[in-house]
Image 1 (cartoon, one colour):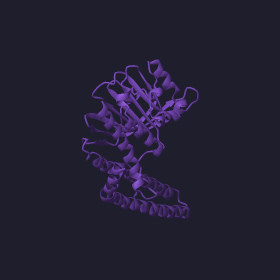
Image 2 (cartoon, rainbow, N blue to C red):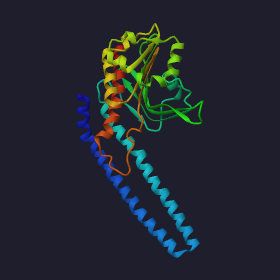
Image 3 (cartoon, rainbow, N blue to C red):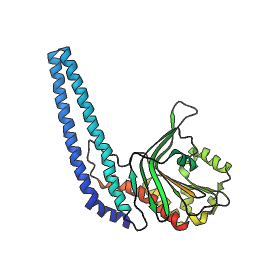
Length: 308
């Protein structure tokens, strides 16, 4: 809560002025779109009045070129908005004592083989799209994360099935967990049957009976191999944090540990921080959700670093 209050102060002093500047740009763009629409309507009326084919074709060509230009301006606003705001959010986050410099690359994403290696979804991931790549250091751990949209081809119908959409993070641990640990959202159990079969086939068994936190047991399914260091990694503080965030946000969290590797996934059904064109983007809530998602992932990595 204290961190969020600090972020609110930072928002008021640093992010809000930038949003106001971008808002002026959005309004100028919207005014241009409205004026252009009126002018194009006038041109169309003029064409109908003249009824000269050559002039009509020429004017239609000009209108087509101008519409393309307007779409280009809108696209430029959309693709430049997010990097401006995200970099300001990351500047606030990496001021923390335990954080190194965070690097943001809007067009990059985590590699597909790392997503598959997590073992959380057991999918060929036929469609794998990603953006908003962030890398850095927390404590002694280097990490990388990005937004992902993953789909697979249905074996039954000619369509793409949902696999995962949200933020995915991976990091390499200092010490091995000597096995594998999987933490899955219980509410998605029926959709994770294939992944669970794979985990069991690979020697992992349910350890729900070893979890003392009742709320955690009711929220998550936990599987692990016999040699995994579960109690060391899955601290009481982490269990409480995971349950609290799930209940407050309505999002689902996945985690897996495989020897030296750790993977975390948070569901998100929309593109975070994508700007609006036809209404204002000056909103604390617009940036708060992105900040809290990133902050949760950071806290999990910090806890892993402290217990590994």
